[in-house]
Length: 433
Image (cartoon, rainbow, N blue to C red; front, side):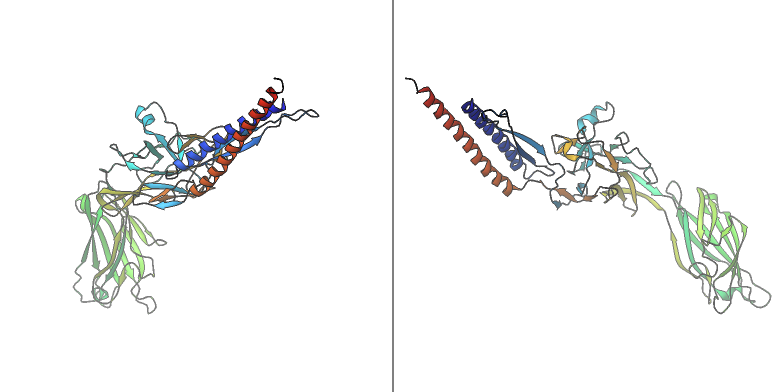
């Protein structure tokens, strides 16, 4: 019985070390595979000898596990949609074959890195057929709230390179100096005009014609102007008229002292702006706060538009796409604007090593891994997303070669045990001749 158990223990040793060698071979074979997670083999002893009886060898059993929570180093690339996770968390992806079938929501898979490029339909996909998933943004660039404990809200990140977009103008800031000499008795009283371009809701260029007419008194100086605004989109209709009074005190000379609406929206002293209605909707015109010198002023003898700024942009073509550290996918246009089109969350689980490992360095949640949660990148326990980067294999070739030498020696030793048991059994057979 004891000799037979020795033989069985030797066979178990050969099998276990063969399993360890297979894991080492897999690790070395994938030493250049981006995002590869190495496999580790542990040995467990088996004790089967009954208490108080003769000793019987139990042997050994091997157990393998993939260390998904171990990360390789990050290397830079030249592709803006090469993505890697720095820290905890994984990118959600799906197999392109499931998406093409269109039979319900595809199975969410997880990976820590990928080289994503647009396919014929504009979806960000790797060469191995993994499509990046994300939450779609609203037309204004905001991302609505989605459930975080399910993948139902995730969609393939699709880039429409032929997309045109424009931003309507909703606010204009006026920094204009009006000549103080024009409000003195005997001046000509000629109005000063300023045309400010804006973009309507369809991206077309329109103009607001702003006319400043001085109030010329019979004597002295009135320091008062009438500001009239007309909208070209409404055939030059007046959309606002205001009476402006300027201070002539030593400490605050030339700044706004009063704004009296004649027509149009009321003046907001806190923000220094008025609201007028152009053809496409309300427009905020900032003329400066009372006593401030950063809006309309009345100084010296010259009319000078010093600073005119506005938001919005004309219609432009998409030229590039980038992913920021928080997982937001931004589309950049040739007009200089950028718009958020998707948000890629990071998926975290209590036990990443409990996930099911499948092809292409991807993993599936399982009961052993625990329930997943979709975090904003950089929030909670998760790390951030690094663009222009890939994660290298977690394999340490030098360490694997060292383990291979140990495994070879252990295998040879177990083979020697079997050889010795065979010789002993032969001697037992030769007792009776």
